[in-house]
Length: 363
Image 1: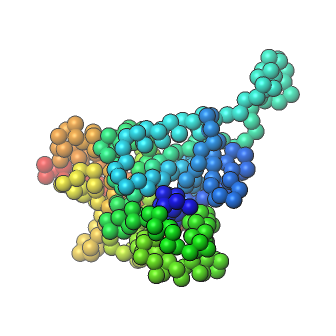
Image 2: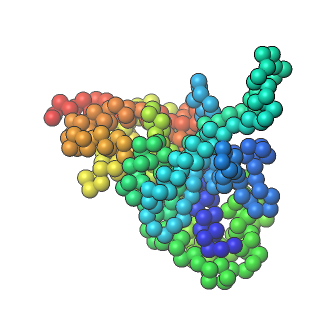
Image 3: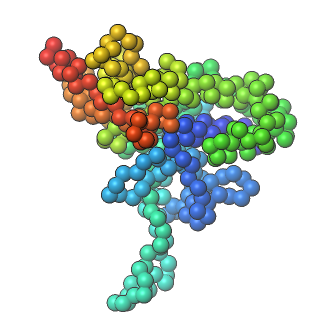
C-alpha cells in the first residue's frame, strides 16, 4: 500500500461513517452492475464507457416517489491542495456516464425489427438515479464551488468540521510512515477502513489494530478526533433537493434532540457570517416559550447558486430575507440521532416566519 492509497482509504472511511451516522446505508454489490473486486476491497459501478471505482456509494434513508430511486456516490480526493474546477467537472461526466448506462446487445437490436417480440429489448434490472459528489480534505476553489452549485454536485471538505491540525495530519502520511508500520497492522488497517459494515469497529478481529491506533500519532489521532465530532454532524435537505452538510460545536446532537422530544414548537432562524456569505448558521430553538435558552446552532455552507442570487441584489438585507423564506422555509435534518418522534428518519425544522416578517417590517 502506498501513502496515497492509505490517505484515500482513510478519507473514504470518514465520509462513509458520516453518512451511515446520518441514516444512509452502504450499497451492497449485485455482482453485475455494481461489483466488488475480489481481494482488493475495491467497489465498482458500471457506466457507458467503463466500470468506475466507487469510493463511497450510499442509499439515502428515504426515497422520493415518481422517479427512479436515488443513490449517492462520493469521489474522495485526499490531495494536499485546493480542489480545482477540473476535478468537479470530471465528476459531472461521471454522473452522466453511470446514469446513461444501459445494456443493448446485438440480439436486442435484431429483435426491434420484429413486429411481435417475445420479450422487451431492455435489461431486466432495477434502475437508479445516481447523484455524484466530491469529498476532500482541503477546500474547493471558487470556480469549482460555482460549477458544483450550478450542476447540483454536493461538496464536502473535512476542514468544514475537523480542526486544521487534524486535517494537516492527512498530509503527514508518507511512505516513511507506511514503512514504519508493522505489515500485519497495515493490512488490518486497510481491511478495517474498507469494511462497510456499520458495526465493523466492534469486531474483535480488529482488537490488535485498535490497540495500535490508540498510540499512533497520525492515523490514530485522525480517527480519535473524528470519533469525537461524528455525533455533531447531520445532513440537511432543502426542498430544492440541495444537500447541506451541517455541524454543531455544541456537543453531541443526540443530547439536543433528546431534550426536545415531544415538543412541537421548534423553529429556526438563519444567520450568515459577514466575512463569508457562503457560511451560515441555523439556530434551532423553541422561541415562543423558552426565549431565554441558548439556541442550538448548526453551521453549514449554503449552496453557491443561492448566494449568487443574493449577490445580484448586492447582498441587500430584504433580498436576503426573501432568500431565507423562499428556499429555507423547511429543512429536513437527517441523523440516526435526530429522527422524528413519529419514527421518520428525519426531523423537519421550519424557519420562524414571524421572525422574518418582523425583520422585513423593520426595514
